[in-house]
Each structure stands twice: as structure tokens, then as C-alpha cells.
Image 1 (cartoon, rainbow, N blue to C red):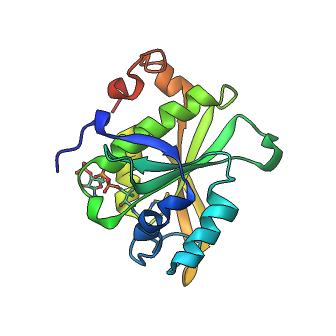
Image 2 (cartoon, rainbow, N blue to C red):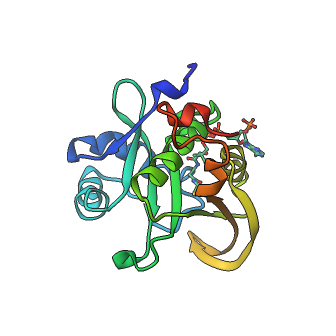
Image 3 (tube, rainbow, N blue to C red):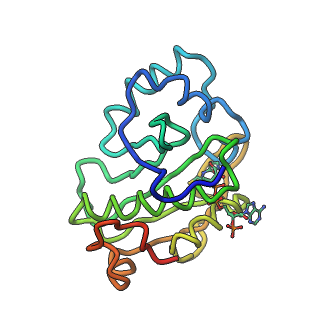
Length: 190
Ligand SMILES: CC(C)(COP(=O)(O)OP(=O)(O)OC[C@H]1O[C@@H](n2cnc3c(N)ncnc32)[C@H](O)[C@@H]1OP(=O)(O)O)[C@@H](O)C(=O)NCCC(=O)NCCS
């Protein structure tokens, strides 16, 4: 499968996405570095979509041309948007789509969309478990800079994990004039 930037879109989830949503949520390998519990049933998937995903301010499905979710990307901000200048990104793809560059393209699109939609946002962080090398490589290809280590920062599955702190700034993108481009993320700096 040869996927280019124009094949990828981001959109809100709906309840009818539940089967595609489960494709990545129920996979223990996909979720091995994540804090949340793996979900397995259609009922659990529907509850998660209804209670958490759909009401979330910025939780998008990553889709290819057929508009079906193959993954998700999320921007977490402090409750009440008290600190509007900062958000934390998280991203996931179904296993069968790994290793084709799709994750990098989707996160580039997500970052440029976030900076465009949230005018007060200046900094997007990624907190990545130190063993999750694929995820770190993706962040670096998008243009995130590694700033340090967050020691014992998250309980994921069986133990407390150290995480790398990465960030990308609005000014990192503006330096390359990507936010004014109509085809924005095609020209995103790598
Ligand atoms: C992280 C994730 C989205 C990456 O998606 P992807 O489409 O496979 O990513 P890409 O193909 O764009 O890039 C992955 C890069 O990691 C590299 N990589 C993969 N395994 C690696 C390893 N063990 N060591 C070093 N680099 C590795 C790939 O070679 C590629 O880099 P390259 O293009 O320079 O060769 C996907 O693996 C995923 O969903 N993981 C589970 C969820 C998760 O951990 N999310 C992160 C929490 S924020």
C-alpha cells in the first residue's frame, strides 16, 4: 500500500465507527505502552465512544480514502483550558498499518490542524515511554524535539514508566511558513 498525504484525513468519531475503533483498541500490542485498559467487546467500545471519545474536545479518527478509522489522534489540554498555550498529543494506528509512513503523515496533519484551530496553542508535547522507540522515531520525523526525561511518570500496564518529553512549537512550523500554505501539511518540515 503506497499512501500519500492526500489519502489521509482526520474527522470526529461516530458510534457507527465502533468495529474499526475496536481494531486498534482491543490489540494488546498496540496498547502496550498506554495507561488505559485494553477493551474487547462491542459494548465496551460503544461506551468508550459515547462517554469519552465523542464528547472529547479534540479526539479525531485517522482515515484513509474510504473514510474508515484506522487509528486515532488526540489533543489533551488542561480542564477549562486554563493553560491554553500547551497541549499533549497522543496517537495510535492499527497494527496492520504500521511501518508505512502513515503515522508520520497523520501526525503532521494533526499538528498543523491543531495550531490552526487553537490560536492560543503555542506548544504541543508528546510524552513517550522510553521503550517505545517507534513512537519516538515518528515524533522526531514530524519535527518534535526531545527535551528530557520524565522519571516514573506513568503507570502503563504492569509498571511505572519513565517517559521522554518531546515538544513542537508553533514557531517551529512558522519558521518554515507551513501554516499559511493551503495544502498545509504537504509542505511540513521533516
Ligand atoms: C507509533 C505509531 C503511530 C507509529 O506509526 P507508523 O505508521 O508505524 O510510523 P511511521 O511508519 O510513520 O514511522 C515509524 C518509524 O519508526 C521506525 N521504527 C520502527 N520500529 C523501530 C525500532 N524498533 N527501532 C527504531 N526505529 C523503529 C521506522 O523505521 C520508521 O522510521 P523511518 O521512516 O525512519 O524508517 C504506531 O506504531 C502505533 O500506533 N503504536 C502503538 C500506539 C503508541 O505507542 N502510540 C504512542 C503513544 S503517544
